[in-house]
Length: 384
Image 1 (cartoon, helix red, strand yellow):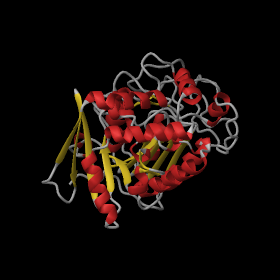
Image 2 (cartoon, helix red, strand yellow):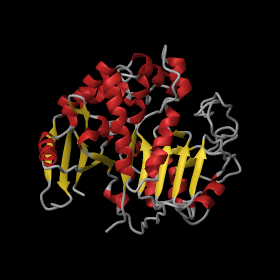
Image 3 (tube, helix red, strand yellow):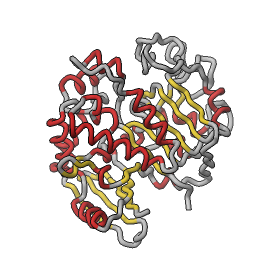
């Protein structure tokens, strides 16, 4: 595998550095004047359904899905192309093209900065009808302090191992149609899960995979990012209760949720967190959110989302004449399938490539990048 690590830093201007893993002694660097990237980044932030400062989640969904460009092919392709030109180093693009001409498909590993945290590297439109995933396999590169943390041990994987699935968990005190209610809705073929943190911690101890489909909310700092299970207020942990419910924080996973000495959770080799903003670590100056917590706990492949995921019910409610074809549930199945593949990154990129082709060919809103481009997978092999 030919892989390149691309890292971004906000320091007034936006800086990028990259190095090919087979040439570690030849790093390159690129400076993007902030004035030249700011407009494209701001336009993209206004396009996705994650809340802007001072905006509620429901307001963000209305803004994005009823006024934004992501459900309109012409507007989305213009913005994705402009974003690619704004934030992708030109020299690196030339190096990638050189490999493609030799018949080599590279692996692009990207570590975002806070200002680029919402950039969907997989779906950047780099040529007419082509996205980054047409040319490269793309993954999330976690910071060195996370992937090479002292004492980190990657959990083993068996294709026949236990899969722990927590799908649409019932959150105590929240009705199905409330803020922390059902994400898949009444038409889901799945029964809603009822599992608390103690049950989940025990189940994950010897599992190979973990699939979570539910709610994630962000706090004031990355370690306060919250997973919502069926935990009532008798559960111990670092988050204050919300009514009858106590959320599970990234800190609870990284350090243990019980009082006393730290006791980190053990996580399986492969983890998928299909929930709003579950991959929002890099929005914070200290990127130590849910992805970092599960990586520290033993995950090698961690799939998470960059922004708020609209539900099928939300799309039908907000978008006039939106097709009745389910969108979120097929994405759940695609991610679950990718996590079981020999190479989850390549499998996920293949699905995203198919989605991109259909979007470009038809403009079908069910193939819009608002869903499939939200997902990124962190590949974090064992420290050397």
